[in-house]
Image (cartoon, rainbow, N blue to C red):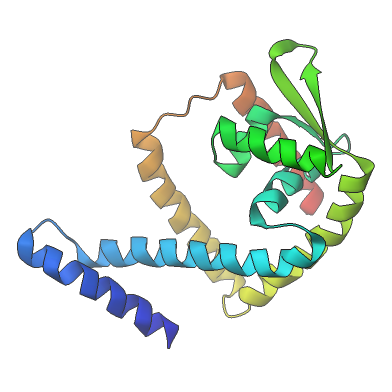
Length: 194
């Protein structure tokens, strides 16, 4: 059973460390982090499999769905995309360049800030997301079929609590304006989903 395998691998990794550094390793904490990392990798691998038929992978999908969820203009700055997909400026620039090459997005200079680039889904990108988004959601629902709605909400609370541990140590370099816009887009997307 995969659940037991994750625990066995974690315990095998932690045991020598517990012996070498007594009192430094909390087995439960290490199990949680290992399980999260293993699951994140598995989610990424599985998503790459089901998105491949559309010419996408989890990275390109994440960029495109962020634009698609931005509202009827399907437009965000590269920095706003970076905040949503939790990656570097360079990674976003590289992905946007690839998506533009594939005709899925269009980049333009931001008329309000010459240092900023605006990214917009093209009609081809919108059509692709009209197919990809529902398919991706169906697959997510299938994978979460063993988790009740209440447990999903509880899990989200726990993940946010873990995330706060990272936030306390790593202050974001995003500007207040970008965060404000990102929050507005997130609220709009949540309202549209309900």
